[in-house]
Structures are given as C-alpha cells and as structure tokens.
Image 1 (spheres, rainbow, N blue to C red):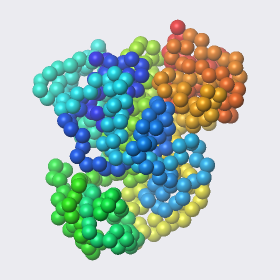
Image 2: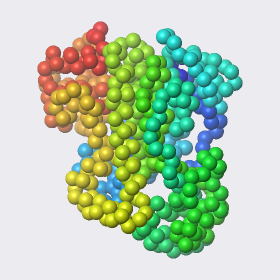
Image 3: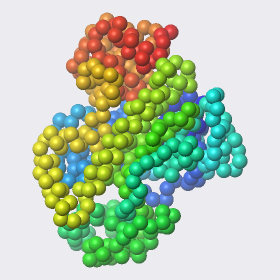
Image 4: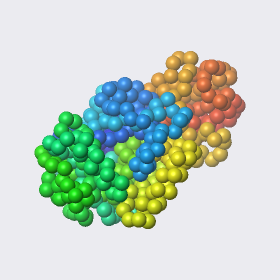
Amino acid sequence: MDVIIAGCGPTGAMLAAELRLHGVRVLVLDQETEPASFARIVGLHIRSIELMAMRGLLDRIAAKGRRRPAGGFFAAVPAPPPEGLDSAHAYLLGIPQPVIVQLLEEHATGLGAEVRHGAPVTGFDQDDDGVTVELADGERLRARYLVGCDGARSTVRKLLGVGFPGEPTRNETLMGELASDLPADEIVARANAVRETEKRLIIGPAGPGLYRVVVPAAGVADRDRKPTIEDVRERLRAVAGTDFGMHSPRWMSRFGDATRLAERYRVGRVLLAGDAAHIHPPLGGQGLNLGVQDAVNLGWKLAAQVNGWAPETLLDTYHAERHPVAADVLDNTRAQTELVGDGPGRRAVRRVFAELMGIEEVNRHLIAKIAGIGVRYDFGGGPDLVGRRLRDVEVKQGRLYDLLRDGRGLLLDRTERLTTGGWADRVGLLADPTAAVDVPALLLRPDGHVAWAGDDQRDLDEALSRWFGGPV
C-alpha cells in the first residue's frame, strides 16, 4: 500500500477518498467491528457542506439530513443567521453520525479504497522508505505513509511520542435519547425554564415519545464506565427538579471538556488528523467538521508526495495551515464553555455577550468562525482573497464546485489568455469571462482555497510551481 490510515471515522474515510482521487493505493484499518450502536446527531457546517458539494457528495448526504438556519451556534446565544453569508450553502445540515460515516466510507470504497474492520493498529516502525504497521493479531503490513485518524485516544499519536498538551476534563456531561410518557409541551416548557440559568441542560424531541437529553454530570467518572438510566434521572432531578419520567434509553454516553492539541501533525512518514490531533468540548459542533477539513487539506498534498510531483515543502504546509485553525477552534470552545457556565458572574457576561451578538458584524464574524468559512491560510501576502476558500460561484459550465470533483487544481481565467502549460496534468483550466469573481484570474488548490490571483502569466507560473511542482 502507499498509505495506511488508522481509523475509519469521518476523517479517515474522507482522507481515503481524497487519496483515491489521485490513484493512491489506500488501506484503512478500523478497530471497530460494527457501526456505532447509537445515532448521535451531528451538524455539518457551511465549509464541510461546501466540501461535500465540491466532491459531488452533497445530494446523497442532504437526502439523509435536515437543514437548519446558520445562526445561534456560538454558546447557543440566540442570534438570527447573518444575512448575505459568503456561501451558496449557508445553512447547517443535521445528520446522524453513523449515517455520515457510512456515506463517506461508501464514497471511499467506491473509489477503490480498501477498508478492514476489526483490525486495530497496535504498533509501527518507520524508516527512510516507509512504515511497517503491526495489527493486534500480529500481522505486519508495509506502506509508504501512515496517518493516524484513530480518535482522541489515538494509538498512533501515543506511539509516535507527540505531545498532546492542554487541559484535562474538568466537567462531564451525560447525553442520550430516552423515552417519556409526559406531554411533550410540558417537558419542553419545563426544560426551557431551567435553561434560563443552566445552559448545559438540553431536552428536545427526537421522535414520537423520544427525547434527546443533555445534562451536566455530577463529576468526572472513569471513561470506561457507561452511564445508566439512573445516573441520568438523578442528574435531571438535581438540575431540573424532575426526571421528566424518562425511561427506555435508546443510547446513552458521556463526554468531557478536555481540550488538547498535538504539538506536531507530522513526524517523518507518520501524520495525524482529526481527533487524533485535537480534542475540545462539542460546543458549536465543530469537531467532525474540523477533522473532515483536515482530511481535504492533507489528501492532495500526501497524494502529490506519493506520486512524486510534490514541491519540497508541500507536505509540511499541512501542519502549518491546519494547526493554527485547530488552535483557534480550541480557543473558541474555551470561550463558549465560560459563557454556558453557571454563577452570577458568568450569567452577566453571557447577557453582555448576547447584546454584542445583536451587532451584525459580531454575529457574522462568529458564525464564519464556527462554520469554517472565515479561515485564511497565510500564503505570504497578496490580495485578501488569496489563502481563503472560494464560494461556489456560477460559471459558464454551471457551478464552479462541479469542476473540482476530480481533486485537481483549477485555473479560472476571465482574461482568456492564461494557460496552465506544463501543469495541465495536475491543474484544469476554465477560460470564462463571465465567471462571477472580482479578479482577472485565480488559481484554486484541490481543497478550494485560492493560491494565486492576478493576470500575469509569469506570476502564475511561479504559483503553479510553488503548489504543483515542476512543469512537465
């Protein structure tokens, strides 16, 4: 194999698909033998939705999800969606996590990736030529690169010896889907009244007679100890004064507020992505999105390295670009944690913050941060557009994102006089004077970020060399 990926969650499956777009031989090893037994709802934010559209996946995924307005994400402070967000997909898509995992795995295997379940990675050794990976049953496999997408307790990260500094769990939360025979309006009204002072309590409908319950735990428990129905009832009585008659759980789990960021995303031929590289509280629903966006940033760069055309420093830009993005997410979840905390001081700060969210610019800035559309990578200067992702604009062939499904770069040329020359095997060309962009021409990387903007062929050639290697 060219690349072995440890973990077939959303990050690992998306990375496998991205690599297969470039013909890289991929094996995904996952320790779980069966899909998750519970259907926790996750939200795809704007940037992740854009990436799904960019790879031709959005129709399949949207059919399994539910749209919600793109507002009120930051610490659940009520705020309307900002008007005119810079995206053709300015909404949240709620979808059960097992469903998105299954769809992404099917996408990867459909492109030719091999996935093995019940095959946890237990060890590896790397040398100048590749990585030897050992499985729990003693089998040893060889690949040119290994990527750890194996979650918060990543075996790959631990064996790699990469530091994971940050804060341990200080507060835990219980969650699940439980049944109740009480009238729905009575449950929701009581829960909303309690939420006036306890923002971490959430009870909402999850189906006929079924409710999604989120309630603060009493302390920090052993992570291997699963919560019981009595644990949830006891905490509901302590927080809300009633257990709402909850019974017959479909699933229950616990999560903490640990916040950690790997010191490095790459050591030699081993890399980290997703929760293996960063963990944080689920406030704002950013975790899955951050991992999927890691995968799309890394995929084409690692494929370029495998296929032999990567510029010398290209693979190192993965850490340089994604590490600061994760650090920013960790900071905003720390801030949100304070805003949902209890006590008169924190409640006062939340009231002040709610006033600030009434300012359009503040609301827009924070939604762009949570939704992932405010990211600008540092490419060393140039117009503000350079380093940012480009929205899905209209072009003469339809929609821009439809032209990025093959995972290659794209030159969008309104001047109709520029060329990709010796890079035509790695970068497509669309000469379209009607394209809805504000620059003469721009060069898009495979992840949809603008690598160059202008109208000079010599400058363009330098940008092509920087991101796509030497010309053929």
